[in-house]
Image (cartoon, rainbow, N blue to C red; front, top):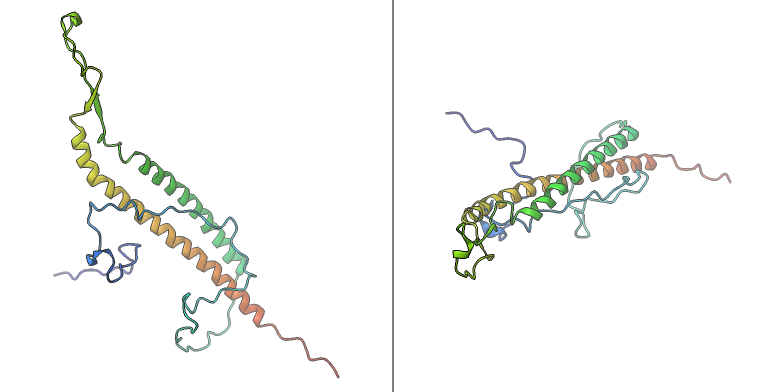
Length: 210
């Protein structure tokens, strides 16, 4: 029997729920309302921050005064970094990300605007006077009034399954774009770290002569 293949890639861009969150049942069911989780995305940078800015220390993870214990490794040896090429690549990824965000927001906005009606779940018909000789018809107070289309119930049942599926798709795409934004930020941080390393490697000014 063939053993299952364990992919090195995540099956979902979403982090695993913490203990006590999400009911402890893992992935939500296919009919769960995910509208509150679908992210609104935007590109925060028109131009990436300069590599000449001193990098932020990320070792503490944003909390506490003491950084975590770090493994001592051997010196890496000589480094040669082309910061110009890194900036070009970062700007290229940022441009592609901006285009992807625009398309995602276009689809997300469309889904939000039509998901309550697009499957005919609110379709209505009007009562009409029947017969060729209208003079033979008695007064019908319902003429001109509306009533649910016979297919509206079917549309509601279909929407109850399809809307969560669309929200799930948006959630995955939006979360992936957020991760891509974090990746671009890490590229920028790496450039700042390399530039700061280079500045720290300069020889100090010679001592003043007495």
